[in-house]
Image (cartoon, rainbow, N blue to C red; front, side, top):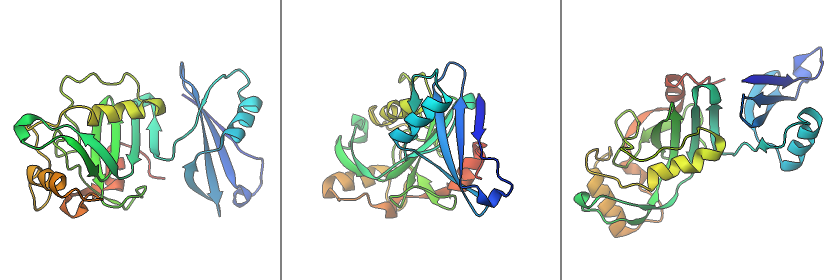
Length: 232
């Protein structure tokens, strides 16, 4: 992958307000990232609107016909190692439980989630707060079956997406939610067993997932370090 940094010629870095990166991988679409600078320190990457991207494409990528918007829920992506990290807000999902679990399938509230794909292995954790995680955010075991203690997911013989790209995020989420949760790997939860928790949720139908039953795991910083993702 080639990385192009478009940086104004300034004598004092404290005068710099924005750095623009154009990431160009072989046989892949270009990705454009914007990073702001405050008081000489690099801040988070952020997305740009369609009009700005179109202007940048015309100036710097005249031979390129496509570009990708960076969605707000994307936390990190590294095409060379096929690593991608993103989060999803709390919502309602249709969940499918194997008959052996004796839990009814149907729509249920789920917590905010953190997902990671690396080398075509998928990982998941839960978030107690319904907001984008920061480095100090406490993560929790995903309260679903089919997830090992380390967060990696047992996908069985389910066909996996061929790509690890922004466009494939929804496809990876379908792998997670559109298959049956089975009894081989029961959910890791607190106070209640996974079976008791989901039976309770389907019976009481809470408007929000009861996060008090989530079992703590690690912090977000610890997770990204374990995947060799820079936290700067």
